[in-house]
Length: 247
Image (cartoon, rainbow, N blue to C red; front, side, top):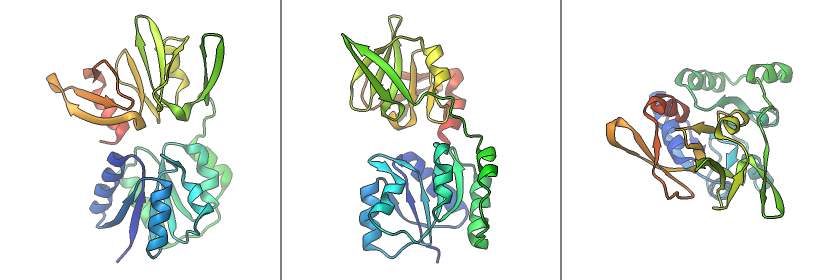
């Protein structure tokens, strides 16, 4: 029987992929959510036949695993960070799927695995196919008092607007005034990673702690770090929001 594991720090995404694999009659042996957890599991178990892995994990990137333990398994990457594509294909990668993963794309990747195709990857074609876009901001500059700070986009949980002021919030809970309206901020962010759920909030998928049904078929989002304001997905944005999350 095929032995498959998932390495994904977003638990809803991991569960969704598990359900998609079940439709292909594949059972998942383990779901791991960090570099350290993956290293520990791989040291204690025989190498799986196939690994589905996000690249950006909570305590590092997937490639950090290779620094601690050799990985002989075939790999299918599932991630929103397409800038890692070239590096991914230098490893044992069978395919590279951008989130949200579609069932037909998953099936095609599995067919490649079953056929064990080891053809040389055309890097230029890969770049063209993934449409790598470096136009999104990688860092956001903020000022507090007389101090200036540059914050990597990976550290940003969400932006919100209050009293005509835009605030940037990091995963560590720090809040900074950002001197641009949300409309301009939205255009500077990778839409695979950030989504504007209403007029007040733009959030990263990793900042979503929970989602609950709200009145009039709307959704209430529980964020990490927590907010003092109810965060509600606008009714007209619910369908796009669910598609963005792959729900």
